[in-house]
Length: 104
Image (cartoon, rainbow, N blue to C red):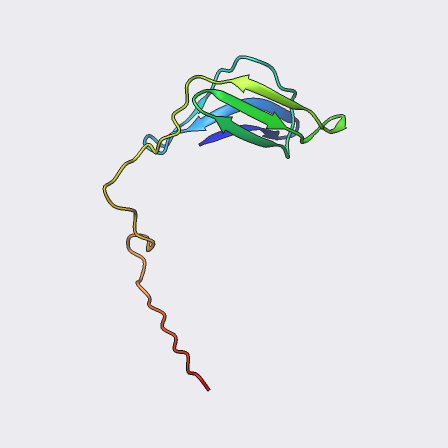
């Protein structure tokens, strides 16, 4: 997961990647420049380009799009399995719902 920019008493322009395996956040070094902002949208185009559009900064609404070159980022899941995960979290009670429909 990648989180970019935001607001914490000031508009930010840092980019972080979360590892679900280690549980750690790591900063990503980028090539390019996109103005500080929050409330924007971004799209990752694997393997290494992130496009950022819009948002808000100290000057108000931002209507520009920029791109950043990231270190190569994998778009494949970091955990693989031969079967999909259960919809019921481990340890959660199992419930079943049934319904019947009758024609009149």
